[in-house]
Length: 248
Ligand SMILES: Nc1ncnc2c1ncn2[C@@H]1O[C@H](COP(=O)(O)OP(=O)(O)OP(=O)(O)O)[C@@H](O)[C@H]1O
Image (cartoon, rainbow, N blue to C red; front, side, top):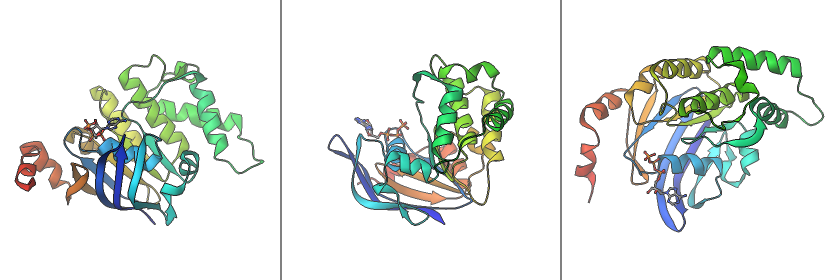
C-alpha cells in the first residue's frame, strides 16, 4: 500500500516543470521534499491533487493501486488524498464549520447523515489541540486569517478529514515558534501505520518536530538525492551547493 509516482512529467502553460519524478511513499512513512525555489515542489503537490492549471504529459501516479491521474479532484479527496496548500485559499461566505461539515458529509456513504453533535464534539477537541479559538468556526474559511492562522486551519481540516495520504506544502511558513510546535504535534498525533505524509519544506526546524523517514531533494523537476534525516543536516550546513556539481 503506497503512493507510487513513476516518471511523472507535467507542464504549466506549455513549459515543462516536472521532468520525470520517481517517488514511492509506503503507508506509515513520512517523506520530506526539500529543494531550491522554483524546482517544482508545489507543482508536484498540485499535479497530485489534480489542479487544472497543470497538464500531465507523461508517467503515472497510483494510490494503493488506483490510478490517481484519471480521478477528478473530488474523487482524489474521497480516495483519501489531502493537500495543505502553500498559500491556503479563502472561501468567502462559507463558515469554517459549514465547510468542514460539507467536506465530511461528502465523504460519507450515500444515504448516511453526519451526526452534528458528534461533529462539533470532534471539531472542538481538535481545535483545542491546535490552540484555535472557537470563533474560528463561524468565520469564513481563511478570510482575513493571518498567515499562521491559515496554516493552523489547514491542519485542522486535515485532522478532521483524516486522509490516508497528506501533502503539506510549506506548512511551517508564517508560523510563530509556538504555532510550529503545536501544528507539528497535531501532525505527529496523526502518525499511523495506515497514513503517509509528504512534507514540503525549506527548513530543518519543521523536520526536527516531524521526523521524516526519508528525505528527497527536488531540483529542476527531478528528484536528485534521497537519503535519511542526515540529508537535512547536510542541506542545512551546505545548502544546495552540491547541485552545481551535478549541473551540465
Ligand atoms: N500557474 C503557474 N503559472 C506559471 N508558472 C508557474 C505556475 N506554477 C508554477 N510555475 C513555475 O514553475 C516553476 C516551479 O514552481 P513551484 O511553485 O512548483 O516551485 P517550488 O519548488 O514549490 O518553489 P518555492 O520553493 O519557491 O515554493 C517556477 O518557475 C514557477 O514560476
